Length: 249
Image 1 (tube, rainbow, N blue to C red):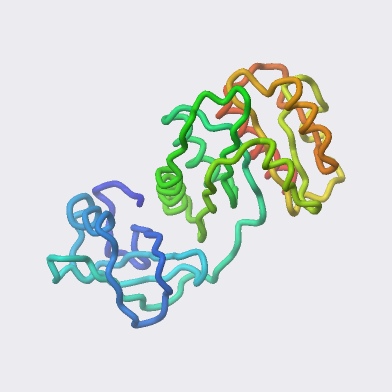
Image 2: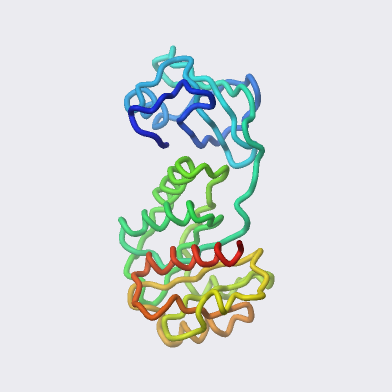
C-alpha cells in the first residue's frame, strides 16, 4: 500500500493501489481483507466513494469504488480496467537467507527490480535457520503496490543449495555471483539468451569451495563478477538483478 496520508484518494484512478486475490470483474463487489480495511479507514482516512486501484496478477489493473458503510469490512466495486495484464518476464532470485531487516529489503527491492520468483537457498554458511515466507510475501506485495507492478513474485519455501542445483531446469540460465573471480557481469552475459534466467547469490562469508565447484558444474552456469569491492549479501543480490535487467534492455 502506498502514498502519504495527504494523498488525494478521489482523483481519477485513485492514489491507493491494493493487491487482491479475488478475480476482478466490472460491477462485481467484494470485501477487502482486515489489514486493507484498517489501512484505508485509519491510515488513509478514506471515505465511501473514493477511488482505489486494484490488481491481482491476472486481470490487469482496475479502478474501483470504495464502500465503507459496513463497519465489519471495506467493500470495493471494480468499475473499469485501466491497464491490461502484463507480465514481469521470467527472472528468479535464488539467495541465501539473511537476518530479518536485510531479508525484508531483498524481498522489496527484488520485487521492484522485476524478480518473478524469490527462492531462499540454504548454503553451508547460511546463518539464518528459519525463513518467514509469509513475511517475505507481504514485503513483495507492498513493493508491487508501490512500484506499479501488475503482479507479485512467487515466494518459495527455502530449499538446500544441493536440491536447487539438482533440479535445475535445462532451459534456464544460472547467473552465479562468484566472489572467487569471474568475468565482469555485463561482459559475461553479452550475446546470451536472457529470457529465462536466475541470479544465485551467496551468504555472508560466501560459498564454500565444494559449493562453488557444484555450482560451476551446472551446464547452464555463467559465473560473473560484480566488481572488486566486497559487497554485503543483500547488496550483491540486488546489484546482480539490476545489471541483468540492464543487459536485457
